[in-house]
Image 1 (cartoon, one colour):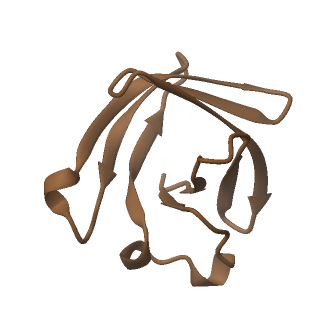
Image 2 (image 1 turned 180 degrees about the vertical axis):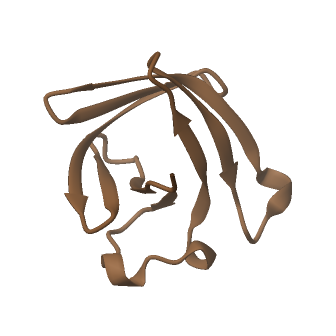
Length: 98
């Protein structure tokens, strides 16, 4: 997973340019993982919560910071891209790793 404020061409997605990390989406509609800041490792954060997908919208409720985000989903190459429905959100690039 990587997150940025402005869109990135899929061919140019690199871990070093983004906030990165991993999320594990589980069948019971929960997730856990870690947000990683490559240039500021002291900011790395464990995350967990619940998620749902309805009508192409991914809703993530993060217990770690008591927030809820909604993103429309699109798929390109090996990536699922979450485009935020709120203007202050981040564009999230998810790549399946197993």
